[in-house]
Image 1 (tube, one colour):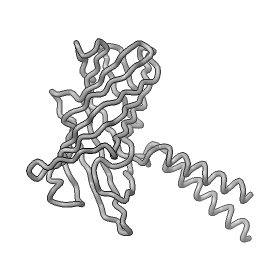
Image 2 (cartoon, one colour; image 1 turned 60 degrees about the vertical axis):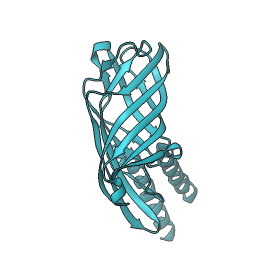
Image 3 (cartoon, helix red, strand yellow; image 1 turned 135 degrees about the vertical axis):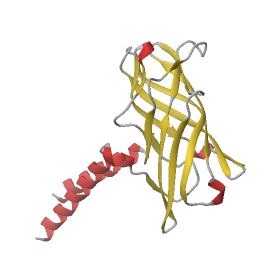
Length: 216
């Protein structure tokens, strides 16, 4: 009976881990020992993509990783301006450009951030300049200066020295394939949700599976 209980408990762990790795659960934010922004996680869009119909380009499965360790936080009135390096990865499925990886600086304004450590804050990406190579050459993506990329961040003190952070952005972008001489707007905004680093979730799932195997 005890052995059966162990097997069942490990099975539950596997189910929980796999649920965390599923797309709907990815929109649940993360737990972190720091309330600083940007959070040390990744922004993904499991059900959306960046599309530039004028060029026949679709960037599927986008994932955006802020490098929290590079962040410079500057107070402006009650707001905080966070500037940091980041990497953007996606797979292009329209023109056969293959997987892409672009890097560059991002600036976010968090409204009334200096008034409280926790709470719900309006946010906006005011600048993003990413570049890198693809199978077809040099690509550049920037935040569309004509369309605000707004969002929201919720920070909750959950005790034990930890904070839970939920965050999303509705991002409008522009794409250039000629070194920035011409820019093509994305057809719509893309909503990106904060999750823990995907690698951490995969390790959680594989670890639970390994425990279940050993118990059996």
